[in-house]
Image (cartoon, rainbow, N blue to C red; front, top):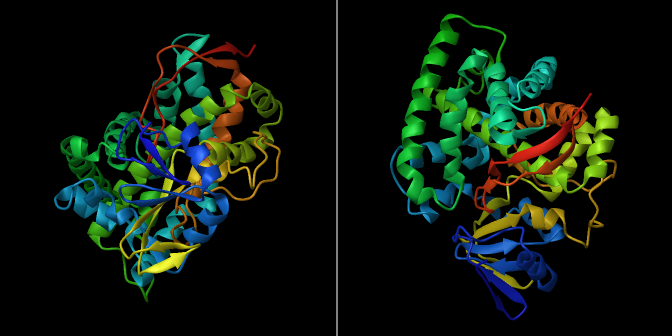
Length: 400
């Protein structure tokens, strides 16, 4: 753990892959102060300050600076990263969001829910062994990738294309970005080619699916998405939708294995699937921090913040802040909102998709995988940025 106490305020070396954003040291620092310092700027540790700074008018969305923080300032990946709707502000952000919103409509996603249920059952049926599984490769990865395939209207047997390239792209949000850049850019090029072919097909053969909705995205006052914007948006959907769901399902299993009473309750009451997703994302979110950048010099609670400073808002630390939450994990509890999907104008565009597919998967898993427990051999991504299991062997009692 790379941290150093400086009086009441800790200093975190978040660029160190061994740094753990959910460690006891971080929680102890939260008790001393609402913030810590980092090589990038500051880390916000408490719920109240997180909530206020998330939407502060003197801060902008800050992820745009992430490549530069890791020494990546040019090339295909830097250009694609800068194109994200997440990294746009003002009217440009509003224009892209208005054009893309119809593709994420609850009606379109809701019509796919029965297919999510059937998919989850199929994957559990196909576990190689009846009393154990490698959860990532046998469930989380194919489930997340095939959900994306269903949305895109492509054959589900092409899911490995999605999972392989999107998993590699997911490395861009980790602290090893600089080292991983060559394979990230190779995966990006392959996804560009895949999406270009898909867009060409939907223009010639429109369907009732997500891609066609994006291709048709248009308002008279806004104009259509450009070809580059369309392709970049689709790559972001494949990467973001896959990476988040795969990681969050693995983190959900980690959490429920520590709270088996709640797992049994979820099996008995599948209608709690939605609340289970919210509670897991409060205490164990895959998005470990939300990023903002200071637009102009100002002072916040006695701390001077200079223009250009990166502000990392720690979502797990805020979501478990004892000033706000009681320390329990309870899928029936009424809670203040978590920050697993960000917030404000940049609230995750695909949140309804993630909530829908996970709220279907978790109750089904609870019914079919009783008394799950971790087996040796788990490996994990670094516990910063976006995290989750690489491998997660689980033993369980199959439902009779």
